[in-house]
Amino acid sequence: MFLGLILGGILAVFDWRYIFLLSVPFGIMGTVWSYYKLKETSIKAVKTKIDLWGNLTFFLGITLLLVGVTYGLLPYGTNPMGWNNPWVITSMILGLLSLILFIFIETRVEAPMFRLSLFKNRSFAFANIAGLLTTLAQGGMMFSIILLLQGIWLPLHGYSYSSTPFWAGIYMIPLTLGLIIMGPIAGTLSDKYGPRGIATFGMVISTIAFLILANIPYNFNYMELGIALFLMGAGLGIFNPPNQTAIMNSVPAQDRGVASGMITTIINTAFIASMGIFFTIIIVGLTQKLPDALSSSLNSMGANALAPIISNLPPTAALFSALLGSNPVSAILAALPMPIVSHIPNSTLNTLTSITWFPSTLQIAFMPSLQTAFYIGALFCIVAAIFSALRGKTYIYEDEILEDNTKEEISIQAEND
Figure 1 (cartoon, rainbow, N blue to C red):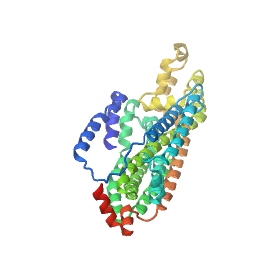
Figure 2 (figure 1 turned 180 degrees about the horizontal axis):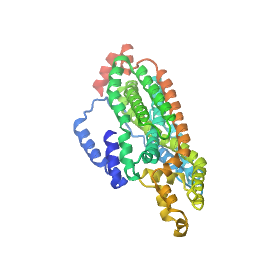
Figure 3 (figure 1 turned 30 degrees about the horizontal axis):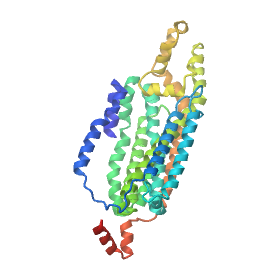
Figure 4 (figure 1 turned 135 degrees about the vertical axis):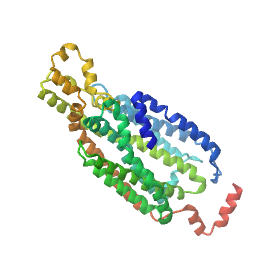
């Protein structure tokens, strides 16, 4: 995370597409390293048939849902978002039906891809629910803060649009530091005292961080944001290690591969859903308030001819133009016919194309939506804390079996495997 934020910002100065190449050497290195260094220590399951129908229905369901969410966030016709796009609606419905069919299949096949019976274990179920809620809260959080930094705060503090991707990465470092510092500490404490209290405390810390973020002004003192980001990273670092350990300890050794795959799938799906939730809240707020904010500011400067043009700027275009390192107003003016632009006084044009006018106007519509999104993030975190606290005492599957005096059976099973 630390290197990615910095290197991504540097590469974005040249071409934002280069960030996708950044993963290639790390992917190759990780593949080679894992092949030669990872050792097989798990107990193989007796039956390991591939769940073809489960894989197919799950693949279709998740793919269709994520495609629907992606295009639902994009403008459609005259609407700023595409949730009423017939293709989006169809994709979402078919995706949900595929997942329902997937659940039906998983309860009947011999070797299911998703071992739904594992959710009968309270420790496994509640830890996964807590992880799901945590990711729903955190997934869109980083993206929203980067929007705040690149679209509003950095330009207001004199940073050029082209340099904002790099500096946004620099200013996000406290989040990574909190995670790096607290992760190992939480893992050690969890081994000593158990995961329930440690993981729950991490979610309480994250809740506090979200409440701080929800109450900072648009032109904040960076110390406020830095503290909130550090607390957010610390909360994640405190929660994740004990929660992951609790999940893996709660399943039989031969099911750890399945459990690991289930954890990853739940987290990745929740991450995309979180992006959809946060981004939808922000776009809906911008749709309602940004046109009036732009029109009012333009009319006050005497740029009445531009008011109906710029005020109809799609919210997604306004956000992503700033996110990709360009001034949206300059791009709009460059595309307008010269007769319209020539009637605008130079002083007004200079104000419009400055790095402060658009962020100052955008924040009027952006900040209330962002505040709502952060309050929802806080709600997710506190509910995750509740589920974490209700997971029960430390539960280790092997210990339970040993308590039932079946140690000999484990030894025989291991020998057979």
